[in-house]
Amino acid sequence: MEAKSNTKDPLESVMFSYTINTSRLESENKLLRETVSQLQNEIEKLKLPALMVCDIADMIEDKAIIKTPNGNKFYVNIMSDCKNIKTGDTVLVEQKNLTVIRKINSNRRFNVEKFVIMEKPQIVWSDLGGLDSQIQEIKEVVELPLKNPELFKKIGITPPKGILLYGPPGTGKTLLAKAVANSTNSTFIEIVGSELVQKFIGEGAKLIKEIFQLARDKAPSIVFIDEIDALASKRIELGTSGEREVQRTFMQLLAELDGFKNLGNVKIVGCTNRKDILDPALIRPGRFDRLIEVSLPNKEGLKKIFEIHTKPMNLDKAINIEKIIKKMENFSGAEVRAVCTEAGYFAIRKNREKITGKDLLDAVEKVKQKEQEDKTYIEMFG
Image (cartoon, rainbow, N blue to C red; front, side, top):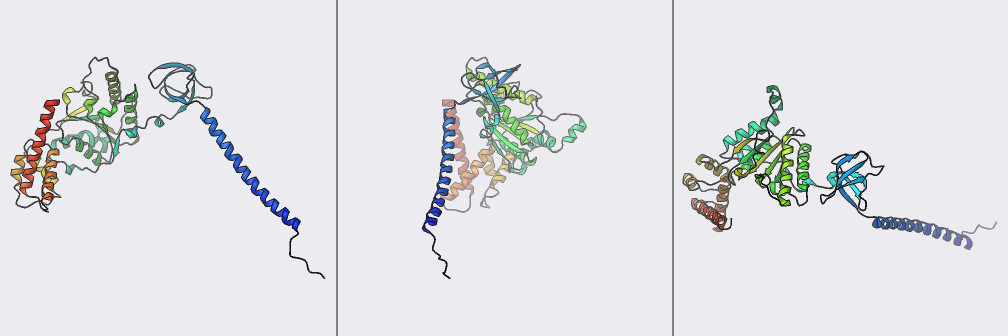
């Protein structure tokens, strides 16, 4: 019997090769069709006009009054499939006839976290010197309501919403706020008054609103407003749009402090070097209930602050501490810290590992000279 041949028929080989090539070509053709379809979709998107972001100012039956970014208001239609629109919502509108297309999440429009510093401070009460009376008062007004709110419910009183720390620069106002945030395990939200004033109409007020909402979301929290006098100085009749926008932002701050929405376990700490220029509406009872002066430390306070800053430093045992403290009369806590830093640099420049009394005295003179130069500059240029 003749053995079966192992070689393939040439026709079969051609058909097998054709089948393989056809399958590969169909796969490539499918990929190309998908790519073309995707590119066509992208082209269609590029042809579509951009939508404008606006706010709903009011609702009248099935129509809306919208406020555009430049502050103008328009009475417009709402798409039939766009439902549950209410005053205050942020929406997308068609640019030509301003018809409301759909509602969007307002947080996508204004990222408030770009304007604030959020942290869990590491400052503890023992890091503060010469502020015993201020610490005691802050513990009563801020710490106690956050740690033991039931006590206030039993007594039947409402704890203060906020406190105002005022006094010369460098006396420890920010440290006090951070220390109470740490002691209550609260989120510390720090903002600067001047940053709350925005370029466009209504943006500053909206920023205030969102900061307080962020504080509620991160509660328990401490909202620390530094340089609050930049926002809350006494109101005067001025015609410029800039001053009017500052007043709008200030009025929104007052509205939040008045508690149209319950602040709960959110406490407000304001800080200023110029209490004398603040608007009386801000510091009346019910808003900033306690005004706490953080003044320059006395002799005992200076000594405590000096001990705190020199604790990690390698000091010569022969240093006359009392003499140095006497030389630092009328210094703030920040200036005492500057003295310690400058004394360290004097030692480093002379390749020594210990800081001597002379280093500290020279540092005191250097800080005094810097302070005098700053005062001269202010007097000359305001």
